[in-house]
Image (cartoon, rainbow, N blue to C red; front, side):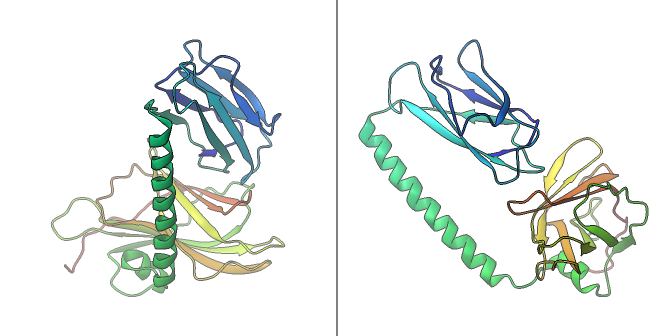
Amino acid sequence: MCASADETTTFVFDSRVAVGTVEFQPGGRLADWALGQDGLSLYATPKGDYLPGERVKVTVRFADGAAPASASFWLVGHAAKGTRRVYVFRQPRPPDVCGKERDEAQAEARQCQEDKARLLAERQEPGGLMGVAWLEGAGVVGSDKLGLLTVPPANALILKGAWSYSYTPTGESRPASVAVRLGLLNPGAEPWTLVGAALVDSTGEQVELAQWQEAPIPANGAGAVVVGIEGKPVQLGCPCKLKLWEAGGPRTVTLENVTFPEGKAKGP
């Protein structure tokens, strides 16, 4: 699971962990960790210099001696999406049953990876409102050029322009889709590729966004990305914070005071 620097991840178990059996590999990468007094919880806080993509293996052994006797997890560094709480449910059972379930899970994971690769290959451009945002075509229900954004100085990319979009079908009170289009300049020495985006509204609610990028933004070059929510009614307490990140790297983009236009659809 994802873990962020200086943020605690809590594991909650339904079986007691044996005292003295918790292992971290490699060691020395956590600022603090503790096993709960009842043995049913484990707290782990990565150090402040824990890097995106960095991995620490956590292994625990259970106190009852039944199978499975142990469990392992990976704390994978992420700049913005650290997991706060993980529930671990364990059903003691014979070893042969555990082996069969493991084989089935591995086969299912391989199938998921193949399906994901196929879908990514088929999707050459965004659809819905995100597609309209990319093409800047006519007929967008509402669009605003965002000029009052708060841009932290630590951002890895330079913002050149930002536009927000919303689409509310006739007869509906909430938008069915929202999107943001960003023009960005990459001052770094390596290309920048968007792999994840999230929107945090004024109440602290975080929503993961779909994203689309025609090509990586080249070093010392410019490019554009589109992120958004489609297919379900949207209720956001604006202004919002928008977070973007790359794969396995520390270069992130954060924009605050993001808002979306209001309006009603003129079409179906």
